[in-house]
Structures are given as structure tokens and as C-alpha cells.
Image (cartoon, rainbow, N blue to C red; front, side, top):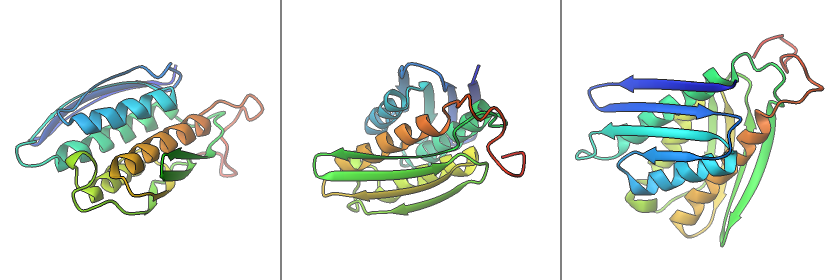
Amino acid sequence: MRTSEVHRATRETDITLSLDLDGTGAGTIETGIPFFDHMLASFARHGRIDLSVRATGDLAVDPHHTIEDIGIVLGTALAESVGDGRGITRFADAAVPMDEALARVALDVGGRGYLVFEGDFSPVGPGGIPGDLIEHFFHSLCSHAGITAHITVTGRNDHHICEAAFKAFARALRAAVAIDPAIGDVPSTKGSL
């Protein structure tokens, strides 16, 4: 089973997250940040990943620590659930439109965390979340999951841009971690990810 449960507690946040890569897309998300809950629920549904997130954080300060730490914990759980990567497709991409917005995501689930993020949000950002924090979430996720991601977004509406990005990432991830019976081994000439 390709599952993981991770708990992380700091002076700023307390997060418990579980996921099943081979799920149905069920999500139970409680972060204290309604817009971010919506993004993670979209991520679960379109990635067909069962995802449970319970997070408390210092939201009286701002959402930064909570969103960053959820990225860390989600990335850690993804790395654990992929394991050595035996049989995964490894590379995948997806494009998702949402009205005037378009997100393109290309992934390599190859053990090296790296993010290239191209696109802009307004200074306030989607759902009142500073726009740069969305990019920071993906950076934290990729760094801890060992995923190289190229995310390109365009559009005018921050909500649409952000939601398209989460959905495109999820769809690309679903394809990249899919088991290909023809591979049967770790998809790398090095013999490990």
C-alpha cells in the first residue's frame, strides 16, 4: 500500500496528515484557512489521492507558517508513500484551464526537489493569501517530496489561477506516480531515485 501518515509539531503549527496515493480523491481538510482547504480538497480530488489534513497554527500572526508547514508535511508524506519509486511512471505533465486562467505543470518524481514557478498573483493573492505564499507552498512540497516541478500560470483572477495550478499539479502527480507494469524497476539509470 502506498500510504503515509505524518505528524509535525512546532511552536508555530501542529499538523497531522495522512494520504493514500491509490485512493479515490476523498479529502478531509481542516487547516483554519478556508480557501486553502478548498485548494487541498481540489488537489485530493483531481489527484485521486485520499488526503486527510488537520492543522492548527499561529493564524493570528498570518497564514505563512501553516501553509509552509503543510507543504513540508505533504511533501514528506508523498516521499514516504512513493518509497523507492519502483514501477512508477516518474515523469508527467498536465494543463488545466479554469475560465481565463491556465496552469501547466511538468513533474519529475525522481528524488530531487526543485521548483520553477512562472506567473503572478495580485499582491493580496487568492482568498486573502499573499500570492508569493502559494509559490512557497509548492516549493516546500517539492523540496520535501523530492519532486522537480515546473509550474506556469496565466490569468487575471487569482482564485482561478491558483485553483488551476493545484488541479494541474494533482493531475500530473497522479500520472507520475502511476504504476506502469512494463517498468517493474526503479525508473532511473542510476538504479535509485
